[in-house]
Image 1: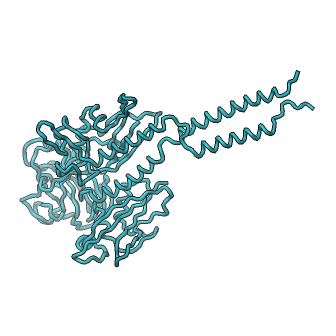
Image 2: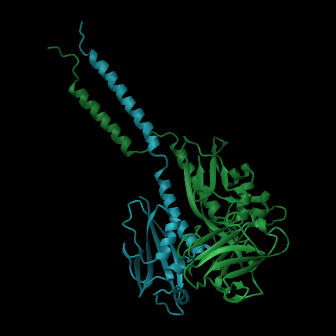
Image 3: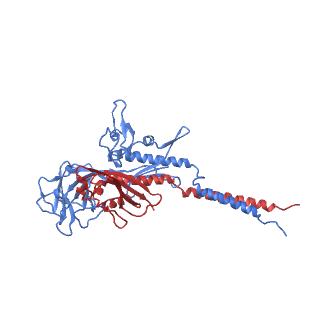
Length: 170
Length: 321
């Protein structure tokens, strides 16, 4: 009787069981690891950023002490870094609206026929999956004077400034 | 030599390659073995759509017989076409200029409306081979993590969250109308004689909502300036049962704080509406220490002159499963 190769069959069965078990364990744990689709998390983050800017812009004065336009109008025109916050009023309100998130804020506007982008709130380097929301505000000579800002705007001129909020989560 | 029982080197190699290939596939194609994956994406769309309609749209009603329509569906809840909660100044505009600012009347009607109506009007269902399958959902308005209570309605609709199924969730930051507020500049508040340390505010009863008085720009006359107490028609009110006191520093949020008052602080005092039930003139007196008021009455400041809607920041969460 030729009894070679018999144990090879049993090893094959054992290996097959091993593979099946591995597959079952991996598929079951994979469902737990991804409870929500990655796209939904991005949508959520971007929506929070837009909501925060919208609220700061449209909220009545009984809710916010200074709205988005007033905050931007009061800027001292000095570029910020991580130690030196350019818009403390905006920073404090964003901090209340977006607890647990990190954010940077840039202002973009046209000066001497060139597009200028300046950092006003810097909390660090954004991660790869950060999102950007933006909202435009309109400044006039009157609004700058009222907020004691350093913008130089002629009395018959309006300045459109884009407020860009970069938001991320760690 | 007995050669049985040895693992062939070819077999070992083969099985390793297969295992590595399977591991690689699972690692780099997420969700490949998750059943109902497409369904989960649909839940995400439903949650996102619902949150957008509720937060950004004022809603719409129309009546086919009279051809009347508008965004003030809270006044015609049985003829609602679209359920939206955003406040709207122009009822014929179809759009609102204040997205994310939610109206109290609309919110109360939203709490009262029929379950089937919500599912149909917000599209919280899916058609599977012609049969309607309703999603289950939870729509909550949270402040500091707890559902808000507005006029005895807890601002939650839908079912309790399940422990064991995939939930699609969207959170929106909104402003919620919670009552009314009368905003005063302390420099124009009235008092009995100039430079007194109290302010008088009149109110014509009865009250349908709590009275909230908000004051800024204090004329602080010395160190240790503070709010002491409030009286109503001469009798002292109790600080917890009759009114609540909140203070907001310049660039901050309202907190319960009875400490030192600064010039730029904003004081918010909410009086219980049960204090003002009869049809008569009430006078609220606010007593301070080292804060003076200069404008002499009568005529005294009245609550109704400055009354506006009061809004609070809240989170709207829509969860669908």
